[in-house]
Length: 158
Image (tube, rainbow, N blue to C red; front, side):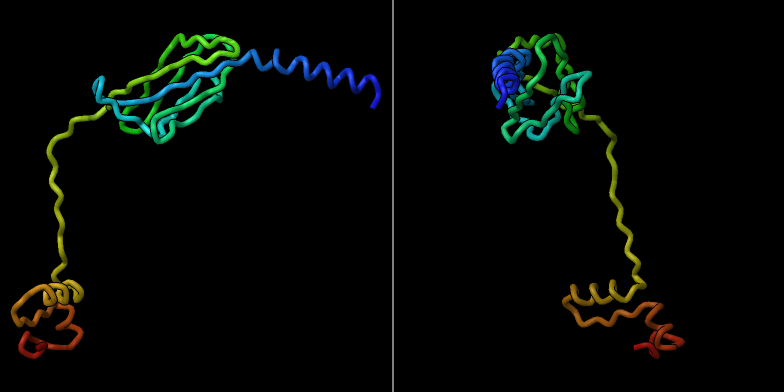
């Protein structure tokens, strides 16, 4: 190795801590619920606004981001909770900023609704299921079955 290479390596090693010190860490826990009864929100998105820096919370709602030193806006989002933004989060070089946040649900009230199921009583599979579920001896025959047998009336079809 030449002296030039050795000086380059030493310079890089000396500058590494200085360059690293230009970033800081934001970490915290994302929860929902009343104070004292908070529940973690797992797998929520945590982003630094205006950047591509982001992460998701773990099973316990914890997250950690490494960002440039400065003042940032941190955006929290999760399905059913909407989006919350915490502005003026100050990150100092080489330090960890704690940012615990509680989100409220964005539930929408809807009117009562009714689920209706219609059954085609002419289908052979439906007739067989009815026959299986009944306790009495019953012969179910539908229009399709009569047509398949070429019967003109029910007596001929049975």
